[in-house]
Amino acid sequence: MNFKNRFIELGPEFYQGKTPDPVTDPYLIDYSPSAGKLIDLPPEADKDSDFLERFSGNKPIEGAQPLAMAYSGHQFGSYNPRMGDGRGLLLGEIQNQNQEMWDLYLKGAGPTRFARGFDGRATLNSSIREHLASEAFNGLGIPTTRSLAVIGIRELIYRQRPELAAILVRVADSHIRFGSFEFFHYNGQEKNVERLLEFSIQNYYPDIAEESDKYRIFFQRTVQRTAKLIAKWQAVGFIHGVMNTDNMCITGTTFDYGPYGFMDRFVPNHTSNHSDTHRRYAYNQQPEIGFWNLNKLAETLSPLIDTEILEEEMKQYQPIFNRFYREEMSKKLGLAILDSEFTQLVQEMFQLLHDQQLDYTNFFRFLANYPEASCSIDNLKPWLNRYLELAQREDISHEERKTQMDATNPKFILRTHLLQTALDKALKESDFSEITRLRILLENPFQDQPEIFEEHEIEHYAQDTPEASICRQTSCSA
Image 1 (cartoon, rainbow, N blue to C red):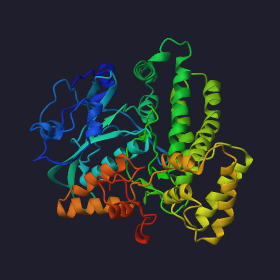
Image 2 (tube, rainbow, N blue to C red):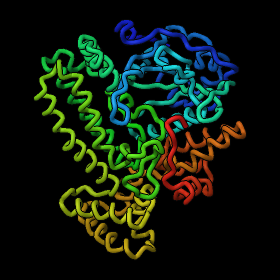
Image 3 (cartoon, one colour):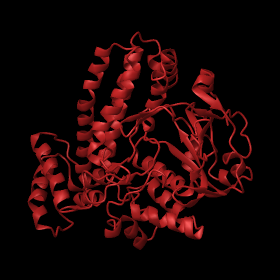
Image 4 (cartoon, rainbow, N blue to C red):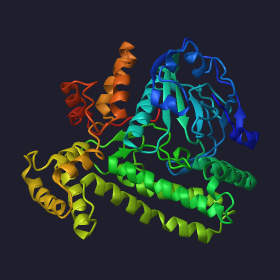
């Protein structure tokens, strides 16, 4: 692999150099060939005899320079100065054959000086959850970190109970968080804030490196990318669960999957995190939290960018989010005329989704088939008739509209009960086949894939979430 390590050049104030701790008898849980392609690995790379040893951290990878990154952040609204990569290591940055740069990162590689007394390992449970979420999000076309592989290790670690441990091999465009800037800002190291900002511009936005107002443009792009990302989350019904500033990436990438979830029935104030008793990170709060987090990033840049300029850029967040979200909803509904009638239709739709307790994802797949697909809910029929009236204003046939909508609205999402089945088989039976099947299914969530999945399986994976799993929550450590 062609390592072009750049972050390490910033110096030891930004990280701790450390090699991964050796692991016991690593074994493969799942490997994603499409993620491997990003760093020029062949589809069968996991069959190589050295794969497990190298990607578990037991053997060094030539060119890698492992380090734990320093950062801090606001957790549930309160600043925590004692953070950083406590259990993760950036192995290095790889330039692939397309000249793209990708971070290669091990999550669960042993304790670093940022570990705060913890064991530095990751649970098998949480690693599988992040692996499948990363690859599912990529299938949906939403910016995300990727998961190359999950590697199990023969160690028990202790959370609320003894758990199996694992290594997650993450591939990402960046690991620089809003909290990376906060670390230096709140420690009074403004020069290092500026150095990190210069580094970010040179490596992620090189087209603006010579602009006189490059710092402003950097912040402007971060605002735009964050607004667009959260608009996509809202449109697909995704709940992140822990939108702390250390889980927000400057490139507008979905980052650090913890107690996440996808909307089942439409419950706007649902949070997937059972620790979030105040619902700070509920689904309907995510756009506002994105704004709040960007304000915290703006504070770190205030010594470098005039406060009035930062405030002007922040004022653009809501209009940008609204525009992107409106565009996403127009694609989901197959409607291109976005006038006041469209706005009213969408508002009434969300009220009906909530009142009738309809499945959020499957509603849009049903809508693409309407009126051929019959509706048994009388309260929904007046809205459906208005929807058809608006659809008839468009210069497009029903078949074309259905094709467009089915390419936007997934048939398959990572539903809680599907994930739990895969986890149960893995944790209780050491059977990882369902993890692989889910990953393959969710790599192309818009189509049935009959060459892989039989009809009865397709219906199983696409059905509404069972009652017992509706609005299920998980913990940060799960």
